[in-house]
Image 1 (cartoon, rainbow, N blue to C red):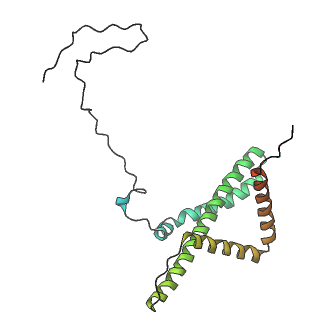
Image 2 (spheres, one colour):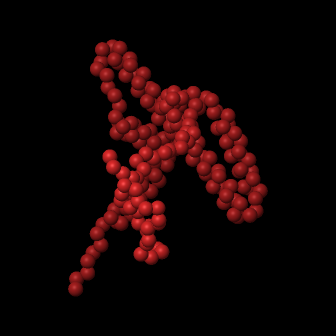
Image 3 (cartoon, rainbow, N blue to C red):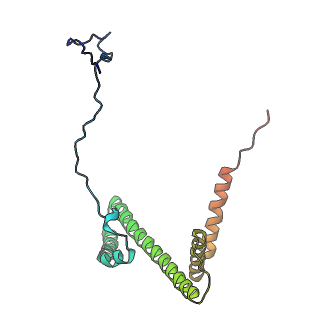
Amino acid sequence: MRVYQASEKKPKRANKKAPQEISAKKRTHTKKEYTQNRQVRDPRFDGLSGKFNYDLYRKSYKFIEEKQEEELKEMKEQMYQEENDQEKRAIQADMTRIMQQKLSRDRRDRQLERKREFMKKEKEAVSKGKKPFFLKKREIREAELKDRFESLRKRGKLNKYMEKKRKRNAKRDEANMPSIRERD
């Protein structure tokens, strides 16, 4: 293979803002040299660390939940003592965040408990000769809704919840309705 060598002088440009012209006869670099960067590995999200065990995680980090409960009590006291409205709002935002985390943990626990109960019943039924049945996501959602409505009914808040839901749906439907055209 014959390689032509371009002259050593730099090629001219039409103006200083134009890109520099390079001879097509000059061979380009086909290999790109990459520096070997050290890969950082986060064990929380890496499969090499094993499968995630939610129960073990909850037991291992139970102290964090206890600490958050203590912080919540301290924040409530601090909020009542605080006179600055901006500080009160900041404390309230932190309290809301912690309470939301607790609610989501509780919701997840109830969901896992429901799933465990179903698996236990299903295991017993299979051992008696019944064909295995696997829950679908839709059925799980329906069971959650039933539980939510049941708990709301026990607390006497079902009517208020349904009224809010109706209003929300009505507003959404109204927003999606096409507007009436005026006749010319």
